[in-house]
Image (cartoon, rainbow, N blue to C red; front, side, top):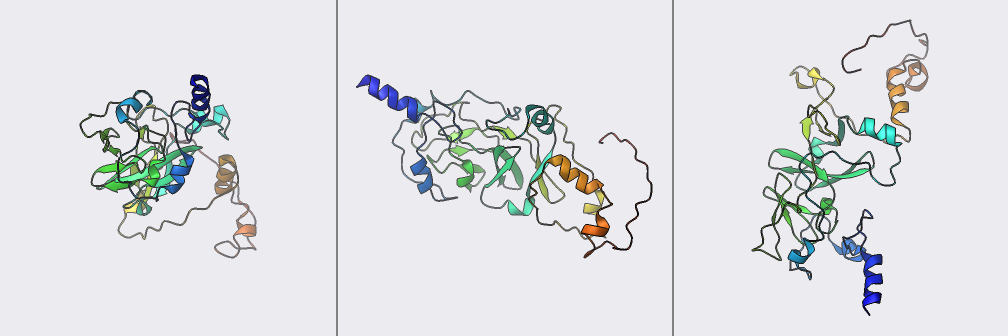
Length: 261
């Protein structure tokens, strides 16, 4: 019987992200109402489960390359050190929002007036925090109701109200900045300084700032960059909006290097 139980455990102890040692019932996850906290006590002891929880992760710890990543290791390392917009600020309201950056699942949420970004994974059982809810200044996991404060540290385990959660129950937080109507973050903030593109016109009172809907492009970042830099396609692609189909010539121009590119 002991051998059978050991075999069952070895085959079941896989989380949503394929990490051994954390059990998750996929059927139970499907039954969790989105953005609604569950009530009642879990069937397992949080004191026992904390021994299997991942080791403590300090806030703003660099993100490691995810499994089954679609980027090359070299490209991912370079891109992970850059700042990216991951959500429209207006879209982050009273409920957590799930996003993906460089194949890393993240959750964006607002506590009061402050934006927070963390890995979309509860350290207790690996459930996506984006299906949880917000109450006051806490993000609450939808599986067992664990309460996480603004710094990512778990403050409360409802099934064990007298237990002070250890640092193992701490979210992997990322830096978050709300600017130009967008939420920005960086997976590997090595120097701690946000490198966001300047856009002073956004805050000018005489300028109408409009945030256009995002567009999914089935191409690499390099191809997208080429599209922004290439002006020769204007007369052919954008003739129905701002381009002149009779003006196809591109005058010679020179480029210059700056400290940001």
